[in-house]
Image 1 (cartoon, rainbow, N blue to C red):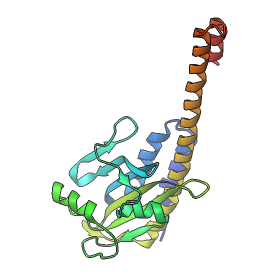
Image 2: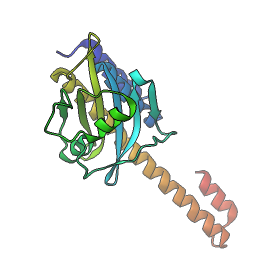
Image 3: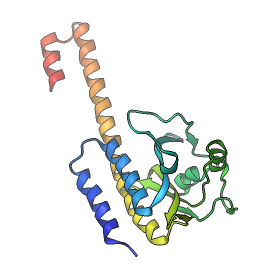
Length: 216
């Protein structure tokens, strides 16, 4: 059953999308809203870069971990899209992966979470992994949520929560599409200014004219 408070949280994200100019900050907010809706302990947002899924933002509440974002890179190696990890498999197949208990599951490869558990003392149990699409259904990233909690016990992610978070992941895809467009425009603008500077230095363009064009 979809709760009105969950709908309100998604609507608030949509409202912020029309006001907030920092798209990367909104991506962080979307992960946190997803964790609130599912009442889970951990979450990771991966962004696809070539054939790698890069860790962009991660939270583990019980370990007081909140790492990453635009200004701070997470010190973890990216996940190869052809690896057997669930995040990579989600990105390749474009399917949602919802597993109640990773330690009893025989369908997927859980080496990554198990290594993380051994290293930190954490215990990964329920996992929900969702692809992030653009408008053309190209995968731009992955949202992974860990350990849904109900009455202080870890429980599976329900189907209703899965449906809600799929809508939220769609918003993330739209944001990523906008981020890619913005970054491409900024790169083109930098290249344009570099060409003007080179032309001015070579005497092919008046310096005053080059400066005026750069200001536009």
